Amino acid sequence: MSVYHCSCGFGADTAEDYADHLGLAFDPDDDLGPDGTAHAEVSHDGPPRHLCACGYAAQDSPDFNDHLLLAVLPANAIGLDGARHVPVDTATPHSWYAHNPGTGEA
Image 1 (cartoon, helix red, strand yellow):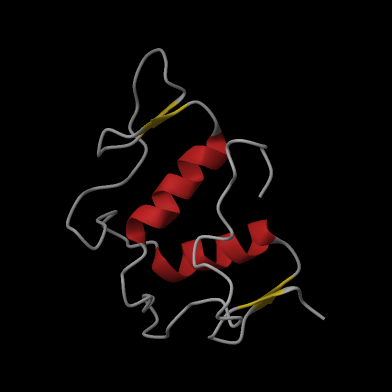
Image 2 (tube, rainbow, N blue to C red):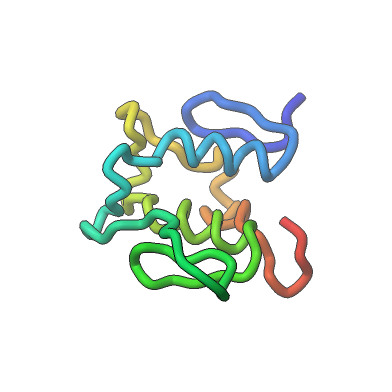
């Protein structure tokens, strides 16, 4: 039985798999977030390791991936497929799957 469940019926055994599911559900083709701001990695020389078109900078991939995911989540949690994507357990915060920079764990 899966540990993480989405309201659309998707089940995942790890937080990373659930985050990947949300990425697929919300990642717009035009890289624009709900506020109209572009969110995509841009090519650049030197630090930081990752730089977003919006100006967000991160040294590690999990932090940058979390930024990209959280930036495209609409307030109503309706994905590109027209379905709502939220954790089934309503006691779980919507950002529970995000990387914890303090510990390096999900």
